[in-house]
Image (cartoon, rainbow, N blue to C red):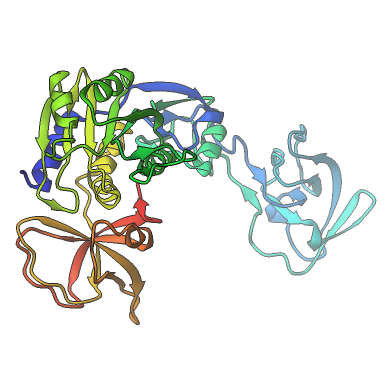
Length: 402
């Protein structure tokens, strides 16, 4: 049995980012930018009006000044002439400011009769002109890695980038194991339950950038589990659920070893989630999660989250951990690293407070569903008093918050 930190070190030694692929901009949202992208144009490419009004010379702006309107400029249609003394050009938002003009008087501050305008008395110093390159310039970059949000997609479009280099979606095969499992919609025997972990895990992984394939349930026999592993070929990551312990019916470790898996670790000093397997099989990563739903959820928060981050090019395992104030007293811990399900709140001073549930039974899925975070208790940690600062891991709706 190894420590959580040692297990994570082994994981980081084996996991690498997926290959880089180019996708159309329309398909890039939610993907991870793999290489810096360079703007091919300046935005805006010209000095542009930020208001509807009249473009003229700032030195001529004074109350009751009169100007002759010599033309019009609209977005996509510039005025080709030159604005001279005593002249103005009707201009609309987004239109290029004509040569010779350096000030836009908003239309509310003017009175127009025919081709003549007269300025009002309350014109401020604001030019109402967006300078060329006020947003970005040719050669400016969007730096990688970066999870591409809608605003990023809009920026890339403005940069005139039509194809985006992103990390390929990790291909994940999920294998649920156990004679006790049936698929949702099937009628279970009195001794069977529904295979729920598989569906929650697939939804979570796909939400965070993976491409998942659900392998038919593997029964507690060597041939069935061998067939499931064979069906999972070509995956970047195989996740098994259940069968990771040492009982007579726990066959994941021996079958994987028989098929040639190089085991990095087996059993981690953590609670919940001790029976955990990680290794490499024919170039594929293999992560064996416990079958207990709470244990599977907690180990996913620690190990699956870390593996996915590296595969997607978002490795941040050196980042400072999140912390909160402890909401109740805790007893001293034993040799295993403890992950306590907890709810978050804020105190009167605005501090984040994490309050662990009194009961931490690993069979209680309802507590995991209600939990906002996990409170991390290091091995051999001394008793902790309410109000002490502790490390936390955020959860989202009872699942991992990637």
